[in-house]
Image 1 (cartoon, helix red, strand yellow):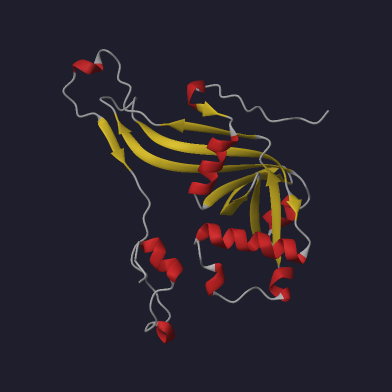
Image 2 (cartoon, helix red, strand yellow; image 1 turned 90 degrees about the vertical axis):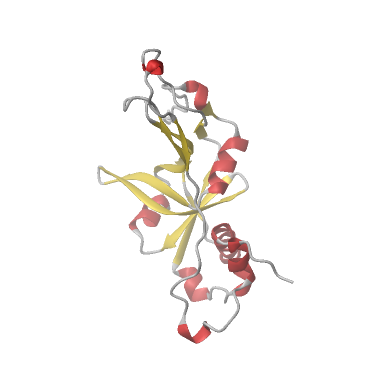
Amino acid sequence: MTATPNLAHGRHPERGATDLETVRAILDAERICHVAFVVDGWPYAVPTIHARDGDRLLIHGSTLSRMLGTLAGSVPVCVAVTAVDGIVCARSAFNHSMNYRSAMVFGSATAIGDPQQKLAALRIIVEHVLPGRWAEVRQPTPTELKATEIVSIPLDRATAKVRNAGSIDTPADLKRRVWSGVLPMQTRFGPPVMVAPDVADLPLPPSVAAALGARFG
């Protein structure tokens, strides 16, 4: 019998969610995931770029990558994505926490071998990182596609956990005159840096300008 992951939440089960809508939203909101797998008896957790394509998760990298080579072998894998939304400041050190959204996807990866399917998957990954960028740049050559490994993992075994609340202070601590609240955290784009000198005179491309909130007339 094939082992299946335990998707139940032992601690704070009220924060758990197994509906795909919540899982999809978390995966779509972030650009970096951690891929956990075992090689030669040792566990690895590798940060990398991901993208969702319907009800499957896409991971890509070099064909020479140990991670992608391992995943292409259909080994069990766990992919974790986390977004930190705020630091929860309580009246005691013990009760400090964080507001967050996290998702975990379990399964076995399947390599995408067909060149056209691989090209479509790569486009989805690029567009997830920076919407609109795919149409602005040169498309991959057959040699580049051959050097790229892309695997997909179904979302049929996934779970999420979300905390979005204030501090939970003990009754005794409520009598203390100590500041308690939530310090929100956000990820934002900053002004472009390290612009290639030979194209520094060009206007920002639509993809970058859109990410920065610029307008095009």
